[in-house]
Length: 397
Image 1: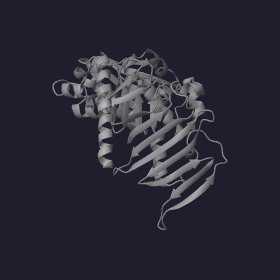
Image 2 (image 1 turned 135 degrees about the vertical axis):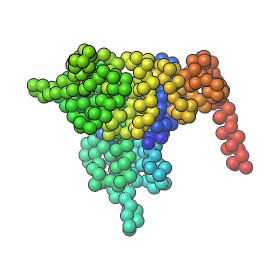
Image 3 (image 1 turned 180 degrees about the horizontal axis):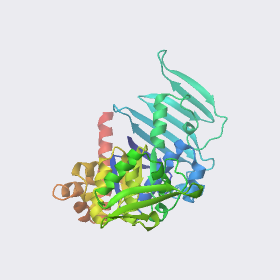
Image 4 (image 1 turned 45 degrees about the vertical axis):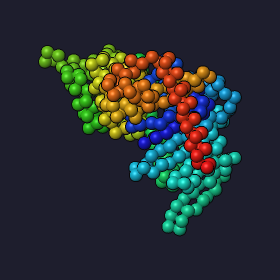
């Protein structure tokens, strides 16, 4: 699981840090930076895929768009902490140059041992074995984008570095998910829906029959008339998606272009819960979903084996979370006076923690004036700084 992310100089994220849970839900006012956090996680994922140029084109961005206007810094600094089974931690840090689209410096630490160092076009790799640790230097004479790990093969790096690479690369964002994209025909998916879900028809066509049956079983819990998720290949390789339903004893097939928005969104989200991606990102998860189906969707995401991060504007989403899930996973985003986005666990704020004793998570959030909440956070942070100063003074003595 990815436990912690730090990023500095990405849009409104300046010296930004967030601790992640198996299920994380971002809340906050419009413009607080919720979508930016999803974009930042997607940006971090691209470091291990080495496709930054294509990624910028896909999002219709320029190199200048990803840097922050709140600072004069040129590079974007990144830090990711990954927890392995057994509670081992791997930490990757890097400095990304926006002009070259490359991490010009990188380090990876595991159990206090530096496994990777990149600096000034030179790379050092550390390996372990029966003979002990050994370090090998590689001259970086090849072109690449993102992290150098995006170009190094599995036989060139140790197993820990390979796991790190795969974990970060398995972050998948669907923050642009929309019915318009979901209705599109596509030829192939390469195992990925696309940021907006535009490869849905091909993705479902490429699923194994067992996975498609499991997906159908899930959807039938909320769409009992549903009998089949049908895909077929048309001329030139285009894939057609049809939804089959039973009405008055007859089976009616509806092409994706005429299927309701909610069913298409549920189909896309649930299809990802059987994917090989480990960390899934969804923006405004309640969009287009009937209120009576939202609880079903939230339950499916929370119970998933995947790590999941969603954003929402609906307090109702929070009410479908158990208190312990809400305490760990609901993150409140806000902006400081200089415009930088900050994050805090919502129910670590004393007034919200007190309300949670008597109310549901969503009810506690509705019952809070967000303008007053920002003031409380500022006071809380001053107390933390004061306590850190006292602790440091005691330690010196």
